[in-house]
Length: 197
Image (cartoon, rainbow, N blue to C red; front, side):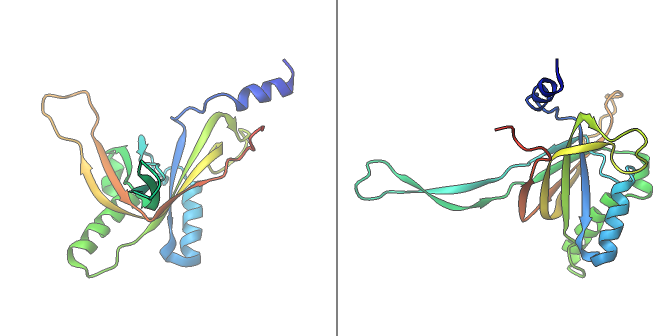
């Protein structure tokens, strides 16, 4: 099998859904905030280690209008529909000691409860990788993979923060927490590789 055939076979294979990364961009810090985000992205321990991401939906609503001359209602475009972005992760001891996500959720809930401070909004970048596309082993920092697609969730903020139900009879299941984010808009960023057609 020659190189061209291998490349065409690879780009037509489905992308597995288990290889992704969640990054949070603090827009309130200006240039320092951007530098902090860049350093955080290079340190995989600071990235959002989530087991599940749900709600990457882009849609709009329509309204049915009866027009003269048409026997069936015709749809008219109404407005964009924003659902919640749901992030799920395992609860780990390090989340109690020092964790940016926990601090963000705490600060947001306190701000909404007292209105003594503003709610901090962040952009969330979700990179999707393919396990076969990796940087050379000698690459010293940053994610090991090359993103093939990404989503930008704009102006996100926590709206729900919950922990799984506890059970004294379930000794095998790890504890998970779920964070739901409201946002202004989701944009799908371009693929790293152009379509072959």
